[in-house]
Each structure stands twice: as structure tokens, then as C-alpha cells.
Length: 235
Image (cartoon, rainbow, N blue to C red):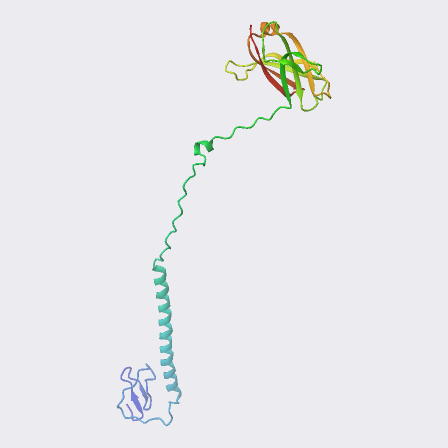
């Protein structure tokens, strides 16, 4: 070591006598060594300024790295920490109303409402001047006159109508035995809404078809416009 230099105890490099820190490693030089103090308040030579800048840069880099690592640790801690879920809000208990339909009842589809026919049939033993039944009845025995009349809410629209007689089942349901097909054509006024017919003694029907319940159906073309039931008995 010369009179104009100070050797760094850390790295061994020679530094100017007035240097405060080592220009190589940045470690503060030991106090107590005799040196010549520079004339200015701060060192002005290029090497000292470079050394001081390196030390300051090292400190700033360490601070920045520390802040970055700290932010990473904070994020990881936040991610790893279980976030408490809010307490579930209890749902109100719904008490079923006594008026609510049961599951079995709702599972049964509602029955279709039958569409009313435009015409009706009346049975009796005789007709009046307007071809409408008087002395109505729905049960006929031998010796009784069988008559019937049709009333429609709209004109027949055809010169003839067809009659069909179907025998009912014993349980009262509609049967499939047609005793008199709709080929039996009766003359009517196309613009009229009523018509009546006298078929004669019911004994003929009892003999040909037998006692039982029957349904008469009236057609205009292939359209059913009226139907009604009557009974035949042996007397």
C-alpha cells in the first residue's frame, strides 16, 4: 500500500486515500487509517463516482427485488387461504295448501268435453202439424206407434237425411251392432230445421231387432247432426 492509496480489507484492492468505500466491492473502508481528505465535499473522480453509483444501484435493486418477492408471497398466501363462504340463507318452508291438487290427481289428464251436436231427436207416438212429436215416450211395445222428430239449430242443407239404428250393450255403453244402416234416406226440406216421421207399429222393430236399448243417429251426408236413445220391450 502506497502513501496515496488505501487497501480494502475485504477485496484487497488499492483505493485513493480519500475514498469512503471500496471502488471494487463497495465495502466502507476502515476508519483510523491516515489519508488525505479530498478538497471537495464529495469525491469527484470518475472511479469513485462509479463505485458509489454501483453501491446505490445494488441497494435499490435489493429493495426492488425484496418488494417483488414480498408481493409474490402475499398473492400466494391469499390464494392458498380458504375464503369463507357466506352462510346459506335458510329457505322459507312452504306448507302445502289443503286446496292444492294431489300428485295422483294432477297426473290424470282431464277428459275432453264433448262437442254438442246441432240437432236433437224426440220420440213419441204421434206428430203435430209442425211435424213435432206429441205424447213423447222413449219406450215402445207392440201395438204402439213409433214416431220421432228431428230439430236442428241450422238448416239441413240437403234434400235427404240418413238414419242409423245401433243396438246398445247390456251395460248401457254404445254397441257396434247396426240393425238399420244409414242407407235409410228420409226426405227433408233443405232450408228447414225440423222434420218428423211415423214409422208404424213398434211390433215390427221388436220382431226384427228384439227387445233392448237402441240409439238412433241422424246424418246429413257423412256428418252426424243428432242422436237419441229409445227402448223396445215385448210388452
